[in-house]
Length: 175
Image 1 (cartoon, rainbow, N blue to C red):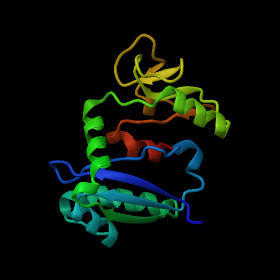
Image 2: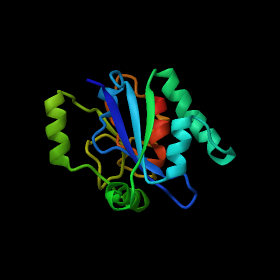
Image 3: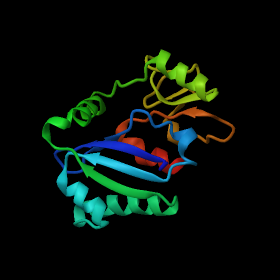
């Protein structure tokens, strides 16, 4: 059975879009992933990813994605989502702009228990949506152990990684 990760993308005004994956436990699965499927409503993005080439405005981003895939020996495939079937990416892009997304605590805890994972900190949280008493916030907060979960070392930590969509690639690189 092929082990792959599927991301969904919503095209933005700049043509780049944002990507999200609802059930991708980054910390646990990175070692077993063989491929990444990007589902997008942007035909140009799909074409560029599948052909491994892009025009100047997209080339740096695509090169970064391709390099990451090559370093990890991942296959990379993009798939077009037409109109009415595009509800999930549309809703995900609205969440990304709102900045208040959070995992349901009961669902998260059930999945962590099943995987026998004990997180030691929530790397991307606020005081209101944190999933652990130790957390990093994107803004100054007296309860937070740090500002910016990417700025701290994760050695000897098992962080919960649920970054805002714009930080997804930086988070994957740090892993």
